[in-house]
Length: 445
Image (tube, rainbow, N blue to C red; front, side):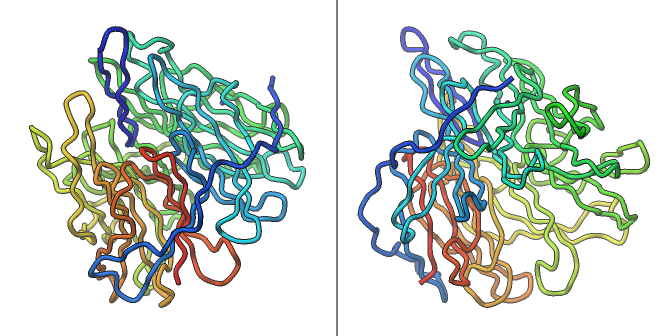
């Protein structure tokens, strides 16, 4: 989650806790400012077998948050959503594409979602061919609870989902929903009902100002025409969280949904069992506190079994500390997945900065998985978020992880996408720094 402080009127500070008939825009904006190539990041004492070199993609990214990587124009392109920074009102966000040049230190930016579209809090973008023309379009969910604070200029319902049609030199906006009380962080494209049309599965969340919170698992049915989806969502169940994952968790041949829960505070991690037209919520774990991300990982420790990896989002350093330690967890499945799963803590030493009453913080944040040290097993890159470190968790033996510092000072980091950007067979890590307005790539040397 991300925390902003907005000054409203005469010195009133408001905390913004963070962790879309079309207009058209054209790529080709000038490159973002970039520094000279960086020296290798300084490893901590436990960096183990890997040393990473930091490359700068952008140094003026205006509050970057989430990242997707996809082939655009034949090149692996980093797509970054950015929230902007507040003044006296809520700023419009952007989504930009960063295309590599000759190496990982040379990048050119173009705009997919301009600030003129007035999208508030553009969240996790997804690049997918939505119109069947062979190129990738951009799906952009947006909004956040800050929009519900009534005395912020420009506030009001801001939840939205839009997709941007890639027409080669322009991006044309198509709206599914807009100005919703529920906001959306992520949407999954999947054929949920077996009709050969891709549907959209998401979780809408809201936190009323000085009032209750709500989360709802929703489905936008795919169509063969129009804006590609029905614009009236179907609510499948109450609960869930920002980053739903779709997988067959109970082995019955249909698709279920798993997620962390933050705004619906009765559990930390949950899954929804799909049986015909019914969806039943089951608690994976209720002992980790409010949580931000849960991912379904096949063969995480080399035994061929499906496991879950998740992060909570808490603060033990604030004036009234949370009762759960900040951590990354791995979950082993029980014989009956409807029962609670076995939780293992796989990180060490993640602690949020205290924050303040009007600027709360929490840790850790979002994460990605992949082989970071080239030894053939799965590792984890995770944002400290309220903890200003970025960490990588090295799997040293099946299910055993060592925590290393990748970056010592990058508060409210995001991205955490692990992928091979330069085709050399080694995975890089794409990281954003909201507080520092930077986008970095970490390359293993």
